[in-house]
Amino acid sequence: MLALAIHTLWGGNPVAVKIGLEVFPPLWSGFLRFALGSACVIAWARFMGVPLMPTREEWPVHLGLTLIFTAQIALMNFGFGATTAANSAVLIATNPIFGVLFAHWLVPGDRLSPGRVLGVLVAFSGSVLVLTRGAVGTGSLAATHYGDWLVFGSACVLGMRLALCGRLLSTVNEIRLTLWQMLLSLPIFAAGGFAFETVRWENLDWAPVAGILYQGIVIAGLGFSVQYYLLSRYKPSVMISFNFVAPVAGVLLGVWLLDERLTAALLGGMALVALGITLLARK
Image (cartoon, rainbow, N blue to C red; front, side, top):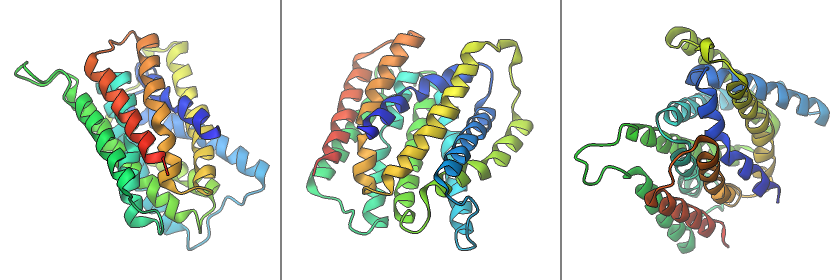
């Protein structure tokens, strides 16, 4: 039930990111999100009495994961800004496809089965349906089409990162694993923001601020902490398979809050991705 609740909230992340991008560009959005998220995780660690400083053996783990983490979030934010929230919700939810594939090689005992292979194929067919929307018969790709591919690439990197974290959680505390990816990414996001982006203060309103707060407190703070807590107790391919809720919630929120169009390709892709991820979760 906790996994279902978290992934329902996760479905609203593409909507929150798109609203926040009206003022804060992708890299600044990442910086603000994880500054807030870090504060939430530190408060949770203090409450739980978990030491925050990594051991000497943990530093290479945190540094390596930070590079993967920063690249994944940057790809995701740029992709969300270049396509619809509904498309983004479906495509980012495909990360279990890649998660179970990477877990097969990285996590002992977490092997692919025929049922999981079927789930991967069904979910992948849904992503193809979304990725090719608007391209057939027009002679050119839709204007926002490249954003879909950025989000799909981010889903691939996310699946790899979650599988790696599932392997590492046997030796590294889940709260430190969550926190240090965020903290170490902050100077990278800030440097990129200063060098390449301009904050659009003229668009500042309550909605973009609410979008950043949702990303930072609900997703980066609460969501990541609960996700790693669950990953430390269940196999990654089982835990991340509860993502089947996220594409449905994301599509509905995008249609409702951003007045996005629900096309047949998007609806079919959402259904196939949700079905494929459900098959991945079955024993």
